[in-house]
Image: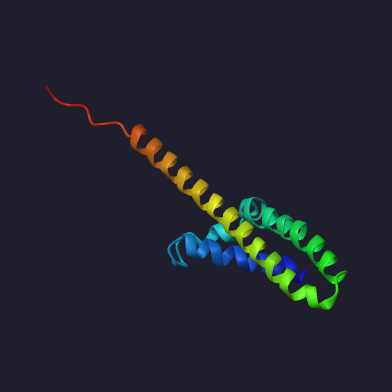
Length: 114
C-alpha cells in the first residue's frame, strides 16, 4: 500500500513538472481511470519488477556489500524511471501536436465572395 501511494506521488510530481509547474491546468487528468492505467500502473509494476528482486538479492549479501550495491541499484532505477518518464512526456507532446494539426486542418476557411 505504501509503495502504491509513493508511486502515485512520484507520478503526480513528474506530471506536474511536465506541465511547466502549473498545478491548476488540467488537474482533472490526475483523477481519471485513464491516467492510472496509463501512468500509475506501469510505474507500479516497474517498481515491483526492479525492487523486489534487488532487495531480495541485496539482503542475502554480507552487510559490507549491501550499501555500495544498493547505490548502484538505485542509480539504475533512477535511469530507468527517467527513461520511462521521458518516453511518456515525448508521447504526450506528439499526441498534442497531432491534435493541433487535426484541429487546424479541420477548420474550414470562409467562402470568398466573388
